[in-house]
Amino acid sequence: MTDSISVAKVTVELDVSTAGAMRKMLVDLVKQGRFFLVVDLTGVDHVDSTGVGVFIGVLKRIRAHDGALALVLTSDGVLRYFRWAGLTKVFPIFGTVDTAVEFLGREVPNAHA
Image 1 (tube, rainbow, N blue to C red):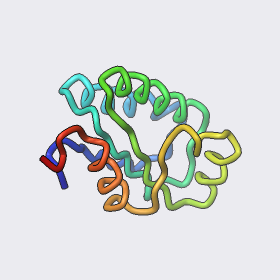
Image 2: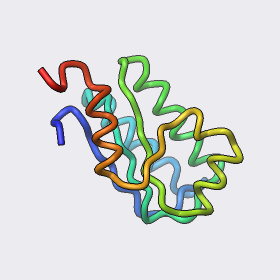
Image 3: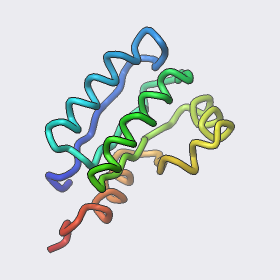
Image 4: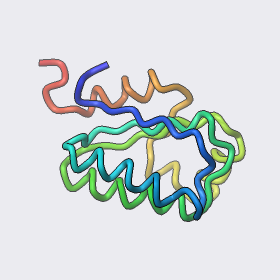
């Protein structure tokens, strides 16, 4: 795994009660110069619109620095929600952290230099 990619593991349902803490954690990573993020949601069975809003806001911050954000989802319900909302066109979504990191590794400038 390249040092340029950060992996954030989420272990709570993402809704209005947890979105603030999630936003702070991810924005703090961006403020530290971590512009290539994998968010591991493998333990999450529910994401509401507030949680999605966190990802969209963080994605905007990351893209302002030519970075990228990938999500790891294994919950059928969460994946259905992302498909229904059209978010699979916004976020690259993977089934494992390794494949997400491999994908972002191709996005990082000079990753193979």
